[in-house]
Each structure stands twice: as C-alpha cells, then as structure tokens.
Length: 267
Image (cartoon, rainbow, N blue to C red):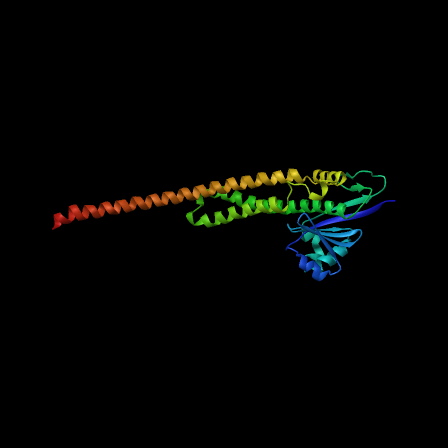
C-alpha cells in the first residue's frame, strides 16, 4: 500500500517567531532542529520554520497552507503560489523502497517519521532560501552593471552609496553562510546512514552545492566591481585634494610675491 505526502516550502516575507506560533497555535508541539523550529500537528503533519525566512509544510493541502499563513498575518497568503517563492516535492511511502530513492520528481521511501520530515523540510527550505538569495543577487548584478557603465560619471559624493552597496553584499554573504548553513551536514544525520543518504540525495537533486558555488562566484564578482568603482571614486578624491593643494601653493606663492617683491616696490 502506498501513501503520498506533499512537502511545500514557501518564502516568508517577514520572520515568524516561536512566540507567534505558540500564541496562534497553542496546541502545537514545538521542537528545534538546526536552529529551526518543527511544529508537530499530528503524527504525519508538520510545519518547519527556518531562521532564513522559509516555512515548509508537510502533508498540507494548498487551502490549509493559505489558512495557516493567513493566521500568521501573511498578506500574500491567498496567492502564495504566485506572490512568494515556493517549491514542492511529493513523497511516496511504500514497503518496496528499502532505501531512500530520490529523483527530480519524487522522494521514495518505506517509512516516514518526524526526523525524515525534518530532513526533507530542511533541504527543501535551503533550496527556497537559495532561490531568495539568487533573486536578490540578480538585482544587485543589475546595479553592478550600472556601476561599470557609469564609472566615468561617478563622483566623490557617490562614496556613501558605494559603501552601502558594499555592506549589502557583505550582508548577503553573511546570511548565506551563517543561516543557510549549506557547508555543514545536519547534526541529526551523523549517526543515521539512511538519513544521511536521504539528505545527500536531496542535496544533489536540488543542486544545493552547485547553486551555492554560483552565488559565491556572483558575490566575488560584485565585490570586485564595487572595489573597482570605489577605487575610481578614491582616485578622483585624491586628484581633487591634489588640485586643492596645488592651488593653495599657488595662492601662497602669489601672496609671497606680493609681500616681498611687489609691495616694497610700490612703497
């Protein structure tokens, strides 16, 4: 006999706190995994919320997801499939699958429990989290292109904007490395080979590592482009200061000539 469970990960426009979940859904059983919260609705129904702005629903219908998001005051709740970044992954549970098998369409396994739901939710949440960062970086790439096109028009007054842009790039990298935690495997899989296999296969299918490497490359490119633009502004600033010094020297020379040569002759 086969059972089917659907996992749906959705971008959160704002952070959801543990207090909000407990207040709005007092019957939930909340536990933590990898700095994220697992809310147990029933034995086969879970909600997984992360610190990087993604919520994953296990075994929820779309109407139930809309209702849940609405109760958390997410204004895009009724049209989350089009307004928010989201991704789904179906799971088939059947005795014929002795080991977890995953392709681009389904997850196949012979059992299901909270740990399995958490691992799948974590991987899917990371995928949506990466997509959020990818979208954000695309916008910054456009801004960076304008920097390269307009380097001749950059002025000293643009330095603050460049510094803010640099800070936003550093923040992106911090969010990816410190919240998506793609470089470390989840703690709960270390002593469980099947869970590790499940996570590794999901990681490959969702291309987590390769997408992370692309993001790293884009961040390096953005950093270089901002450094180039900042160097141009600093160069202009140096030239500006050099001209000020030159004119001050010229003025000093003029005053010296007036004081020691021209004024005595007139007197």
